Amino acid sequence: MNEERKGIMSGQHPAALFVFSSLGVIVIGFVFQILGMLLASLFFDVSIFDLSDLTSNARNEVVGAMKLLQIVGALGTFVFSSFLLSFLYTGKWTGFFPFGKKLNLPALLLLVIIMITALPFVNMLTELNMNFKLPFDKIENYLRNLEDQTESLMMVMIQADTIGALMVNLFMIALIPAIGEELVFRGLIQKHLSDLFRNPHIGVLLASVIFSLAHFQVYSFLPRFFLGIILGYTFVYGKSIWYPMVAHLVNNGFGVLFYYFYNQGKANESLEEIGTPSMLPMAALASILLVAGMMFVWVKMMKANQIHPGVQVEKDSPD
Image 1 (cartoon, one colour):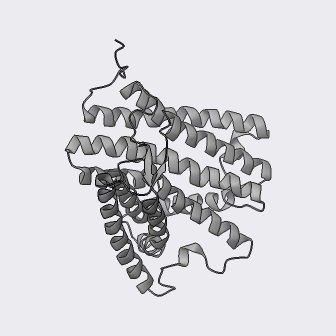
Image 2 (tube, rainbow, N blue to C red):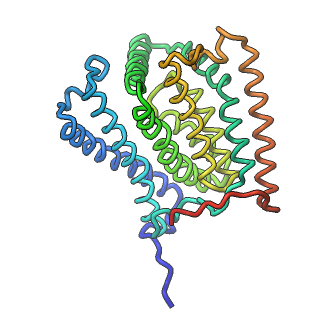
Image 3 (tube, rainbow, N blue to C red):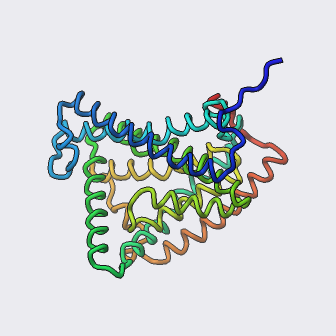
């Protein structure tokens, strides 16, 4: 009889797994960032110095090189590292993650509506977060300059004049983060923390804090933390990593699509203005109340589905 293959780190304490996963993602990410720089320099004939300040050198070659760097870095940091860690823990490339074989179609559709409905409240949190004042002026100025540089970089990266460029942006900004970041922050980090504290709610809370801090944008902490809470609970109650992946994809993809149509002159509002003080503050209040109500219904749906499976979508595990 063949014995079931086990990972070389199977059975380790959750605290050890949390530390190992965190360090593993960082180290692998660093390696792939270097690889991305080398590939970007090779394929686009630009220097590494050109990649260091994209906002002052937005030539097509440099932007293309930066996108390649972003794609390679994200694939390595989040996707490859997750599968490698899963192999070390279970002996299977995806064995650590609960993909499941069936998804609930009505629950998926409701999740899409929830993520879009949350937008006014998310933008209100962004507005509030931007008004935070830190006690030390030098730190405050440094962090705000860093935030401005990051936003300027994103504005250059997200520019798309053709459908092909839009597809690249959706792949880079929506699809890869939806898969990779959920594998890391929900599939690994949240799972380790939930096991460590033997409490899924603590796992969701702490993983959401780490998820937000990991983006290195202090003045965007609150909206990302809030989104992390939603993603975390879809993972807990959905019992499948596909649900937070879909929610993450909708959130990022909606932003990419909006900016594409906005730059094409086919949208009249800036995405960030929805729900901010420039509009009715009641929009944000209505948003959070609706999201809370729909999340309550979503959880009920998932619990009922696990007892009495209803309309489902076949979804094979990547194993």
